[in-house]
Structure formats: structure tokens, C-alpha cells
Image (cartoon, rainbow, N blue to C red; front, side):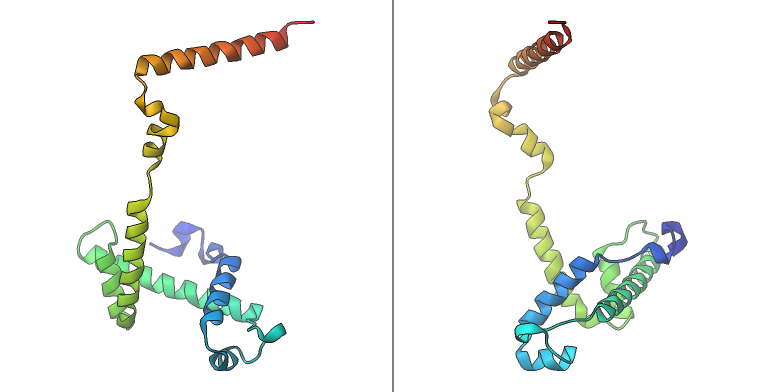
Length: 163
């Protein structure tokens, strides 16, 4: 797929605030000596700074990396006559592009995501168990609904009547 199908490359970006937050979290984890070498200076109170142009360059490089990775993954899936890009396609693309060393870290992130998804309660499940209504019969629920409709009708009629 081309960028034109998504409105052109100029429309694609990453949220600057999110990128800045990631940068800040990573810089905070680095030892002080490494921080000086990476950013070339420090901000107030010894805190590491990252200039806006540097952040924008990082975003630009990240987008290019994502374009290359998704394009390569897409080609691999098409060669296999698949319509969906799978984790295996992305891993093969990482290897083909020379980023095979990233695969273990990616697998860890996928594993974490899968664990979070297992713990999440689906919306349907939330609604089914909402307020104990899941234990009521459909007739009782219908009676409650009709009573609420009647109450709402009464309120509307009392508002529309002249006083």
C-alpha cells in the first residue's frame, strides 16, 4: 500500500507529547555520565534536556523505520498469499532489514500485551455483570425498563403542561 492511500506521508506523525514522555523516561534511566554524552548538556537541576529539533528528528526517523518495517512485512505476507500481517512477518522483516537483534525485545512486548489482554474484561462482560442485572430475569428487566420509560414520560408531560 502506498502513503497516498492514507492521505500522503505529510499526514503521518507520532504524538509529540508521547514521544517526549518516552524520551524523558529513557533519559531518566541512564546513568548520569551517559546522559551527558547523549544529549550534550543538562537542563536545570542537573536534569537531561532534549531539544525540540532533536525530538522532531527522532520522530522523523521513527516514522521512516515504521514505513520500512511495515512495507517489508507487507511484502513478506503477500509472498505467502496472506491478507493479514502476522508477528512472524514482522519478525522476518526485522531480520531482513538487519534488525534481528530487536526480535527478542519485541517478543517480550508482545507477551506483555497478551497478558494485559487476558486480564481485560470485555465490554460485553462488563455490561452483563453491571449492577447485578445479570442475575435478573428478562421479564423483571423489561418491567424495570417500562417503569423507567413511564417515569420519563411523566416528567416530560409535567414540563410541557402550562402552570
